[in-house]
Image 1: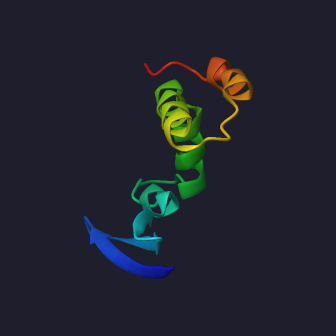
Image 2 (image 1 turned 60 degrees about the vertical axis):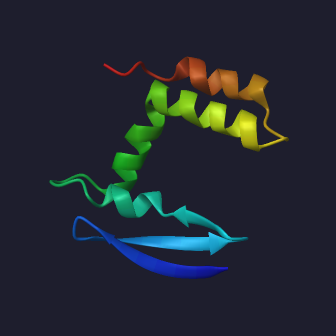
Image 3 (image 1 turned 180 degrees about the horizontal axis):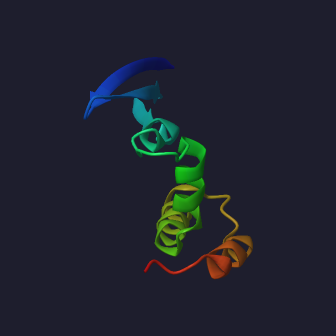
Length: 83
């Protein structure tokens, strides 16, 4: 496992390489939001978004052989619609 930092629009983003695949730190992206918002608030709101959950569910169903789609449906149905 190796780590590096990239810069995106003057924001430092941590990148971790595991088994030759790069993973970015989404909490670093949350810091991009200006104002009184904290990165955890930005991420929390992003994860409540129905479109985000649909994407994550699709991703998990493709790449995670242990994905519990029945349990996930409860999360998906309670998420708000993007407006």
